[in-house]
Image (cartoon, rainbow, N blue to C red; front, side):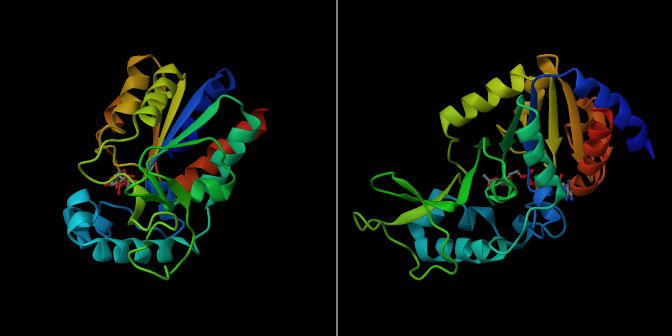
Length: 249
Ligand code: OAD
């Protein structure tokens, strides 16, 4: 199995590495039972993104958009982190130079114990007042009132997530590019690597001379740039790498 052959050389590189960046996508949460976006069972196959995950959709029918988010929150709420999330949380604790960037909004990295996370696309457990812009946590599932309103001013609350047609938080994106272009090794785990600007982060790492390590069950547009490409489930490949790391330390 080519993965086994590749793990030792990768771990040797990791031993001499101070700065590691990790970019995750929906694939890392797939083994926890959360649907990904693309592919046969993908969320965007069943639902039209532009009818649900856009500012226009929310302006037209906040009730419908919130019902969909309430349904997704109900799916995510009981789900637990898998070995992939847990190993990344462990790495953050034992290797000070590891930083985590995620496209996921499910909060499973936090549930696994990761603390410093750049959430590029927001978080489904946060709500934002459309008038005041204030952001707060909200874990109520199912929501009592749909659409929910701001307890302070009564305006509509919206999910604190990035919708199609919206820009990412510039500070978060700036930091993500700093971490990517400043790392020595970048892991890219469970992402189709087609959604910008997130998909450019590994390229900026590669351009700056970092080794790129992809973990994915399928090839992606990034595969040809990757120095190491592990074809398999994140929850199975990461433990193999972690065991080798423990064995060498
Ligand atoms: P996608 O659904 O596009 O891609 C998921 C990737 O995970 C695919 O490449 C799968 O092959 C891979 N995969 C599935 N199961 C896996 C497993 N167990 N281990 C490893 N890999 C696995 O999800 P993202 O790339 O995260 O944005 O999608 C990016 C963005 O598109 C999302 O953040 C979302 C969506 O539109 C917004 O909502 C703004």
